[in-house]
Image (cartoon, rainbow, N blue to C red):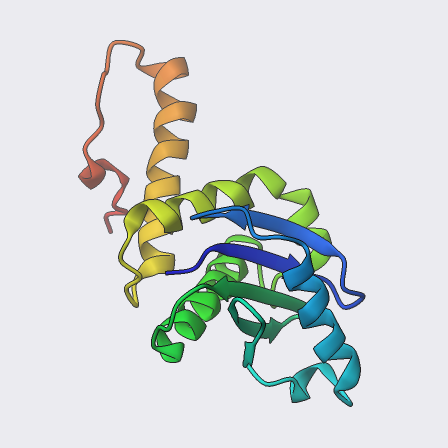
Length: 165
């Protein structure tokens, strides 16, 4: 669906970049940033822009632009929903408030793992943040607990991670 994902700060610098289908040239970001500079405020930029070779979808949250270039026509609501879900997932992982540039830089590896999981799932459901939390909590607990306490276990069922009252 999307070719790449760029996360830009309020000055137009790329904080994070993830290519999904193909390498997207930097000129796409420059085109987008020219449109941002023309607007009276970042909120006034249209969420869907038409570039010479791409459609540019973006969301502005927490002082960051989540920019997704798309090469073909798609339903805009799907791409915008995906961008909001990615921002929501970062919000869940990195604490209260929206994700900021400092939070993304401090948790760079986690950001790339989350974006990789988004690309592997191929279905962007409304439960994406909950699904990713479960996946990473499960992997984290199995890697942290199993090697130190129970080395003979090879698998852990997800039911062990459920908190019982």
